[in-house]
Image 1 (cartoon, rainbow, N blue to C red):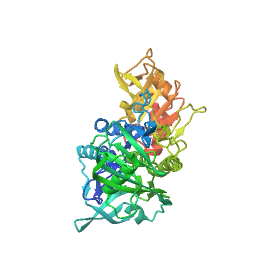
Image 2 (cartoon, rainbow, N blue to C red):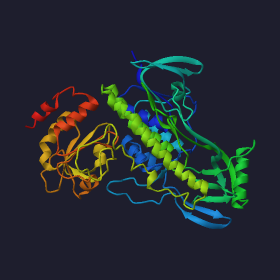
Image 3 (cartoon, one colour):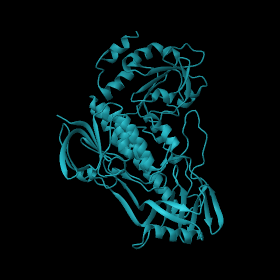
Image 4 (spheres, one colour):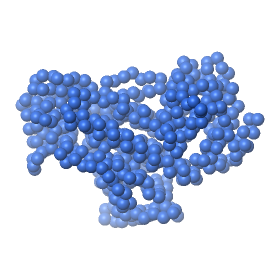
Length: 518
């Protein structure tokens, strides 16, 4: 007998996102964290566009938008002279396929609060002050030892997920190597502080010898994020920061009043050799640690959770092992890519490049894909620009006379099927009856029914680079799983059976399903 289906160790952004993804699917879970109090610092405050799409799907986009901003203009000074002015990433307007194109800044503690509130609304609460001390696993589940207030209890769970950070107890207990490097010569002090004497209209970067000192307003607060070289001895943090700011700015009217949180970062770049051991998984910093440059760490962890959540739920519902097997290869490749981006940007800072503070679209996460992965099937002899494994774009359209966006159709724990061309209405009706969430994509003058997505302005076809006769199956995490032409009920049924097993009700084979429209 098992007590729960999934035990999540670690209640940062990764663990909380995973918990929300599981809770919305009705999975029995617990999420524990050894810290007695919730995190109160800014740390990872940059939310990338792809993560904004994840948050929209989870249902927390509105509070995230209300709690942040696009980030201030930055000014780099050499003495009193402004030598550079700009933003990390210049804001751009939304497009039909990308509704959230910009980096959005929210303090990490606020992002976690919003995720906890959403999780509570789903009936699950974080358990602080609960530490995982040991676990064993067998063919049927995991037995975990949890310690709280000096009392140790065991819990039996089907799966265990370590989202417990770079010093992960879960990873260490598994003995999974965590290769990489720590450069003790490259360190930075990050602090949230109350600062008098400067306005919040823009952030400031002052040169101090061969390093910088910066003071940037922290979104949604009265605080500034201060970044400086860490103290060399046992010096109080506030006094050290005051000295650094005064020396770098050449001003004695900029006063560091109070430090509310601080941490010293070291250039630590690591990637676990595996993200899975039997029924135990690693996610977030437990599996990969990034330099802060590029804002990849938290975002990559959230994407881990978004990838793993629906797969765990499907496995618990009886899906074949191939589905869970896909987590490691998909997310290891994504983590390597994020590490490459972060490291390249860190090298720019080390060299002192003029554009070291600039961030381009490579950090946004929108180009991440699972092409060639175990779940990506593209049967076309001449694939278009968008292929199986790519992110599914958004687009405006109408359904049954109502304006919608494709992301409205995708939102939730389900797969979504799009078949291009009105002539496939019968096939789509059969697929919708069996699997749900199946739609034809039709032109404004084509015949339409309640399942038809009317491509009023042509943005669906252009975004998907799809001709009539193309069928696209969108995964619950918003990536294209199957792309095939011509529209084939048999191909969908075969693909579905490989990942989920045969349907429990209705037609039990591709041939039977096909017969319903013959």
